[in-house]
Length: 166
Length: 80
Image (cartoon, rainbow over all chains, first blue to last red):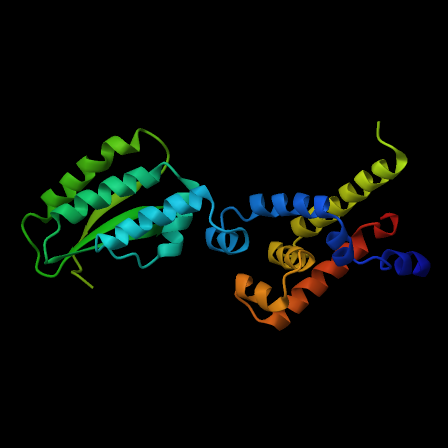
């Protein structure tokens, strides 16, 4: 047994991996699949993929539109799991930014239901001084992106947050 | 047709992969440990790996040691 253990440690896994590029590639592929959901880590290890680039582009657009992204990593993770929602986010945030006046703050966040295993995107519309047109604005934003949903999985809510702009 | 050496190498690779998968599924190692080991085998320094994994170089050292020992204990590396 002791001999076996000594023999087993005679070649270290590190040495094996250094010498065997094929095995390194196999493990690399396995880890990529395993860490796909951890976009930020996967991107740091393997660089941006087409998927993460698309998500980064839309999140940059969201920021450029003046919309807050306090949970950027969570929103990116949600989009990685629901890639078709990228177009929905694009349509909803464009419509929202177009309609929001100086009194309105927009924030794209992930809502997690504490009681059931559910999470989805929420676009909060907040106003310091409540404008009478707030609910109409919410309806118009929803109308603008409903077509992009196309009956696929994934959800985006638009909610008037009456706590006011934060 | 595969010769004996090629077959032995294929078997060895399968053994190595199986050991890694079992250790990951039993949570004896973390995927990040294996990422650190792979990056180091690929020639990256501890400093570079620490940047990628957002941790200290001493943590990288622990990750690589833990992962390397766990695989060495699980796989039949003498066949390599």
